[in-house]
Length: 246
Image (cartoon, rainbow, N blue to C red; front, side, top):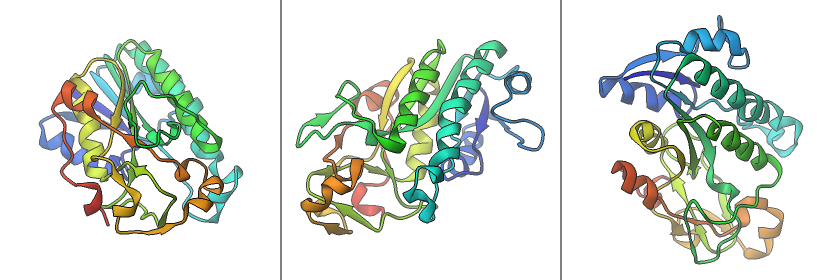
């Protein structure tokens, strides 16, 4: 399969590209010197002749800028305007499958209940742009949206602590990248991506008491996100357990 990757230099892209090549796929990469993901005309030309596009582009602020809405502005633009341009360009170029990264933090607090792809969502603050990206990619007839858990391990920035009680879904970047490749042959739709969820108290991380959960936004929620749909559709299973990521 000819697969075009956007965001190839990011945490997920650096894992996805070598995996794609090892599986025998022909891989094309977005060259930001000549093509912008926001330029639909140029992107349509670049995507012509490809079977699939995997959009893994993000701009997650890792400094103190992440504490402000302004610090997330470019990431929000990539997930909103960028994902829309990619989906439209892919359809214009005749690309059969479009895979878009997203996050599972959008789920509402589920307590001890397992959260599959039909569970209620409650996107707030910087998670809203992920839901826009979902809407954009699902307009494509071959659109696939990945709700990815907390990236930990590999080149991902390590979470300094967890907040509150309940469950957490985490995943190694290599496993998340493998999921993005596995769904190339899956039916269109939404798929959760994560290692088996674990209780926060069982993770080898410092944990702040439940009283701080209301200040932590989505990260204070209990999210027991399951990936049964992805496994049933593709056979994908993570190589790393959540407790092995630190």
